[in-house]
Image (cartoon, rainbow, N blue to C red; front, side, top):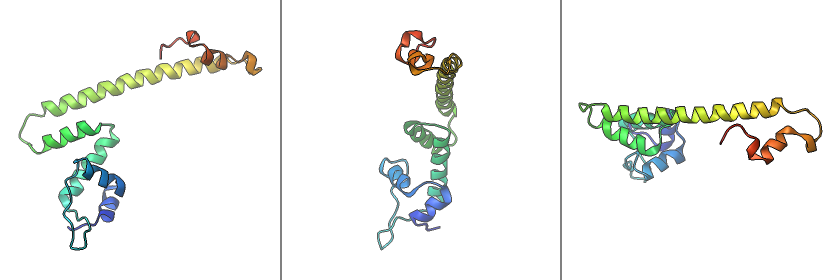
Length: 138
């Protein structure tokens, strides 16, 4: 396989500028170049880029992806580090869900208290203007 960057982009569903960025920050190794100076990619890069794309879709940060990629180079090692990374990420997601749930509840309360009158009497505007009226400490 000797893919140009456009074909790699199509196969992996990763945009060309993103591929270049991943190469620039070292997530993707620098591609060999053709005689005409075009980047060329093989099956290893397709596999690695698919890994990166899926990890990003799952919300992993670049540093965690870099660490996970490093771990894949040692397939016989314990998966303890990968598990720790995933558990930390899961805890962060659960924290964000709790924050978003509290925000949703506060906004729902504000909307339900709205009397659909004039702005000068609008409960939504009052609560936004006075943080002390919020039930959530966001």
